[in-house]
Length: 210
Image (cartoon, rainbow, N blue to C red; front, side):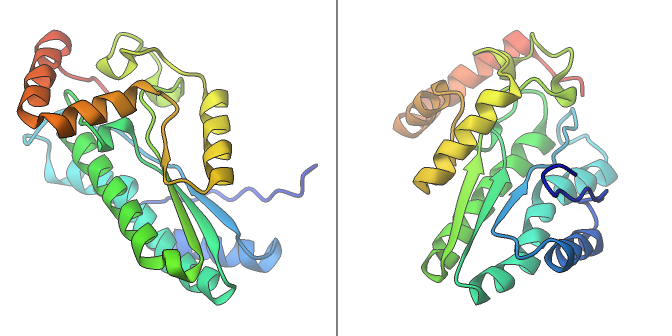
């Protein structure tokens, strides 16, 4: 209340709830200049994961970004611009040991952010995508030894600061863990060698219990 905030409980896996949230904020608070689409879940397993679980993680990790953009971009372009900050993961640039649904949906989230940036950039829409490794949240509690934390478990505050600095610079990639850029370069320079390295990590760490 001290900052004039408005708290709204939303199931981001339901388009109608995202649409209603946007409409309420626009009506009660004012035009949305920056939208941070941050919700995400993880599901352990591979192609054996049940279809319902695949659909749920797809709706939350990917479609929530689609739905937010669907209802925000027309408003923002009509006003001359706006900013979308979508949370993906380093798994969207690399992959996720032990979780096909997570790796696949985070790749899709990065791809969507790229598409939004190249499609609407000339209409004043700025886009950044957050791709951290492990961040200390409820989702990662107890997973300090997981492969995602191989370069350390980062606290939320420096991740938020990385977002602020990237938005100020109007850059696309938010990489709180600087090691990720090096991993990306290795991946693009020699894909087969990178896959070999990831196979070693897979043997070392195994699955991810969500």
